[in-house]
Image (cartoon, rainbow, N blue to C red; front, side, top):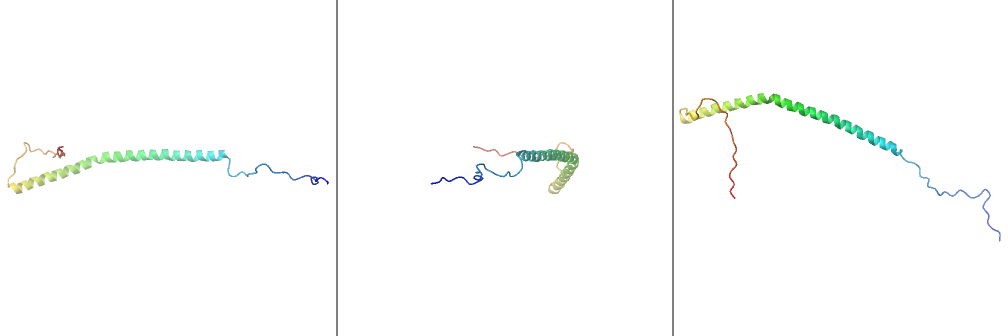
Length: 119
């Protein structure tokens, strides 16, 4: 019986390696993109924090400059209440009662005293 021989020109090459095509960019490109995105985010955060601090400072100075106006409004309200109380006393009592030792206007103080809790 004759022995089988290879075909003329030999057998085809046997592929034993994986031939996976390269997909996407190199890892250094992804790393550079990530570093760029993080750098841009930190840059925007830095300037937004500076802007927020500046707005806070502006708000504080605005409030400081409006304090005299608010104080004057409160004083006008207190004087109005004082004269309304004097008119009410005049109407109820018929004469002006002198409760205080001086004619000077003293700002009323409102103090909250919590009730005593007994255990």
